[in-house]
Image (cartoon, rainbow, N blue to C red; front, top):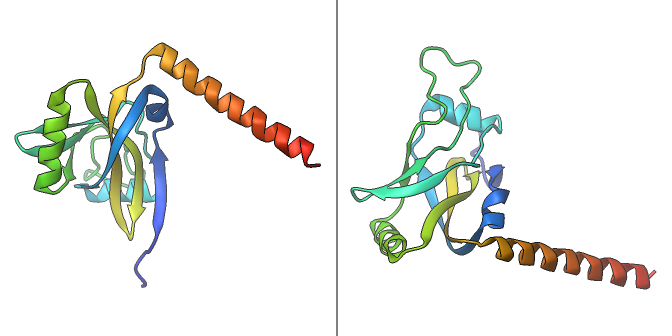
Length: 155
């Protein structure tokens, strides 16, 4: 059987880009159980309430919902268990320094398979204020309106 190649997105956290200014992104591997991988291959996961933290020199992904595998037996996993992230030591040290700086948090942006391995894209993020969110929405809407006017004019 040929190996899987390319990138297959399982879940994206669109809310994170709305609620946070993403300053930097990191790609991390995940330590998963067998039934979690099978459930992810079915395209089932939710990143909505998830976040990452560093404890004792190890990175952890907390509150990500991967539903139980329907064909699983007693070997099934807990849906919201804490999962270990695979990052290089230098990356973990950088993340610790930046999150202790203040106001920054680690938010999962997307969950995907890359060449057959489960990966998560983490964003080093700073929270937006309400007026920032409104301003971002207004800018998006203005861009949409301009593109629509240009398209209409070119007809």
